[in-house]
Length: 117
Image (tube, rainbow, N blue to C red; front, top):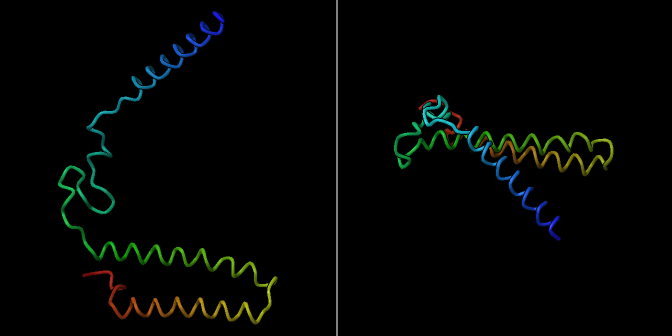
């Protein structure tokens, strides 16, 4: 019983020493170059976070994410080409690509593909 108590005390001391050493070695200054540089979207990290951002930047990001997901959905269609019924595959592929083209036309019609304002 005493041996178990001593062993647990030694393990707790070693873990506390390791945590203390890691805390002392990982101290970072607040004047890091990355922390003082603006974010990728152009915001200054030291200014107010309540400044309104460009809605156009947000919508371009959403369009990028939509087209990124579309690529992930098209890949399985390519790999299942030889394993499924050709008529069902063609109908499904046509419907999916038709929806993508309708979405692209809608974005073009709303002038979201105009990169400059």
